[in-house]
Amino acid sequence: MNTILAPCDAELIQTACRRAHSGTLSVSAPDCAATEPKGCDSVGMVHLFESDAFLLVPDETPALRLVREGGDVTAMVEVIDVAPVRMRERVRSLIWLSGTLHEVPARLERDLAVEIAGDHPDEKLLDVGHGYSLMRMALESAVIATSTGAGGVDVDALAAASPDLFWEFENDWLVHLDADHQDLICQLAQRLPDHVRGGRARPLRLDRFGITFRVEVGNRDEDVRMPFARPVSRIPELSAAIHSLALHPCFGED
Image 1: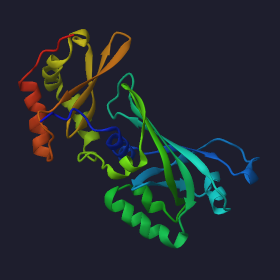
Image 2 (image 1 turned 60 degrees about the vertical axis):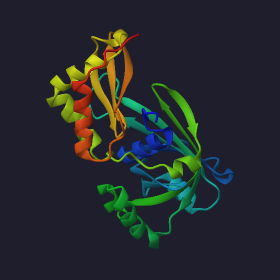
Image 3 (image 1 turned 90 degrees about the vertical axis):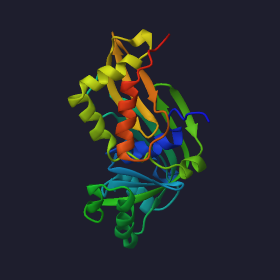
């Protein structure tokens, strides 16, 4: 059985949207609103559910007014997935979700916010009905760009994917690893390929399949993936898998 080296793109998008604290929304206004000023609106959170994306936006958002006035409003949301560890280049991925915006009836917003919070806790959901509103985007396309390239993700595949099991803990783990366990990072760095050996390894991403380092070498960066022997499903297993990588170095070769 082949080892799974990393999450698929659909899972990466799901996970990034759970972690993201904000996004930007750009709208293609209906013909009747062609004179509206164009620009990007702030999005407080992006929650993916099946083939929809629920967006939390300020009540004064122009896109929300266009939706409430009726007509087809197509839009794109950009989510920037940023590593929690301070490093030279913190962006892990860029995500673009496109589709048609729809109003969420006011009478349903609070119940929907509670339902979303059950899967995707975010204190900003408390502001629904108090200066913020929810909109629904019916997804038509999804694109993700990482250091290894860019590609589209089928909406059905995105709907079927789930965020990584450890998405709520990943940021704290990475910061803790970088700040308090440089000895462990040095051990893990023995697994780096020869051409980046000696560079500064910074923990970039952690999931049930493995850990990724961004290695700063001179004036360039390179991401190196270290897969676990098998996917893990519990926090004790995650810790054990990281230490197993460190205790059994496999020296890289170019």
